[in-house]
Image 1 (cartoon, rainbow, N blue to C red):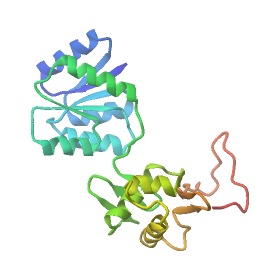
Image 2 (image 1 turned 90 degrees about the horizontal axis):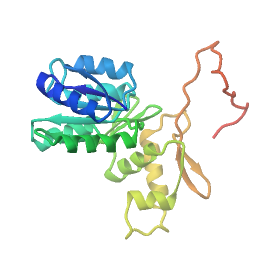
Image 3 (image 1 turned 135 degrees about the horizontal axis):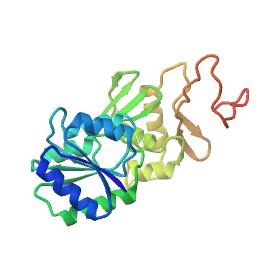
Length: 246
């Protein structure tokens, strides 16, 4: 397993490197945020141990840039700061776990093992489909770059659909995850809220992002990015049949 350690304090970095090497990891060490972004972009690390306070750009910004660049290596953030707000900012920026200094090296390696088991799973900080973007931490939604005002339940419904792109979600599943057990699953509340969402997030005359699957539920369709004029299809791909649609 290859790990990137991002730590500007030389002694701490040396201790981390020595201990992780003894545990069997291949370890690279960098001392600032800019180098961290470059290395983690160029190399597919199995995990990243990231100090919060760094020269250049801090750990928050390192995480944001990596996730924005679709780099999903698990990140264990380290900091001497104990403010809960810092932990929240780190996790919302894309970190997977948080360990305050001073820490037990045994706990650090246990947390690393847990992160490596999960793997580099695609988990963007901001969810997107077509012209719609949703920021779970900031509780904000945009359509075509313009903010959209959603109610709490509209936001929860859109969040659920964006977490399951191109998957059919039954009305029962939606009810259980957006409402609660006390809610009457036989009502048409899901259909009502889908109509509310469509009015707010769709961009006519384009087809609705939310497709009705008759007799089952709903699916959020992720629009395909059209190929530039004259471009060839990627090897092994099959062009869509003429006249098909949702």
